[in-house]
Image 1 (cartoon, rainbow over the protein chains, first blue to last red):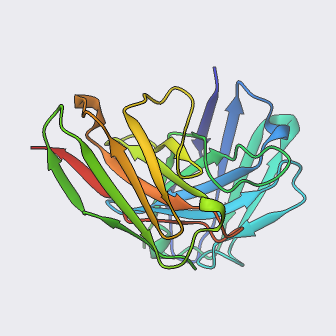
Image 2 (cartoon, rainbow over the protein chains, first blue to last red):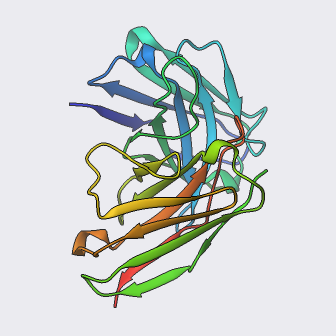
Amino acid sequence: QVQLVEFGGGVAQPGGSLRLSCAVSGFTLSRYGMHWVRQAPGKGLEWVAVMSFDGSDDYYADSVKGRFTISRDNSKNTVYLQMSSLRVEDTAAYYCARDPGGWYIAGYFDLWGRGTLVTVSS
Amino acid sequence: EIVLTQSPGTLSLSPGERATLSCRASQSVRNNYLAWYQQKPGQAPSLLISGASSRAAGIPDRFSGSGSGTDFTLTISRLEPEDFAVYYCQQYGRSSLYSFGQGTKLEIK
């Protein structure tokens, strides 16, 4: 069964840090690029970051560049999002999502996790 | 950045009717790299259409996508009760500058 499960969300203070994890099963992680996409409460979707299948390339939205870092451990079937210098406006549900491109980054999302909620508040 | 504007914001229709959702881009989307997603309350989005018109695996043929350049349309030919949800378009024509529309809520009339 193909599955993506995010965890690690919670409450953090402004300026604090949090690390999200996305555990995948049912497919070979090392064959796919992986994204993080977020959704503020009651709002639309915002792409956050992507990492290529082998971890050689990563790209970020301007809103998180320099503060967030995407990484992956294909041997553990897990993708991570390290979030630092958190701001109130980072409050959102964070979804990991699979890119169907394989060896290249297609840029859209064919499988999604259920999301984990991050709340940044003092 | 390519800005996507979806219209209408809310669409009220009855089961069995035809739904037409619009997505307009602020500049031409390269290779028509435009996707559509459906999101039901409390759930993650799910992929419906990629490449402007290619249905994802398992998507019923009542869903169809069309358009090119800056104007794209998602059509649901005959609405089923499970189709009432929020729909988002997304462009992926500009590498690492991916953007979504603000969404169209399809509600039961």
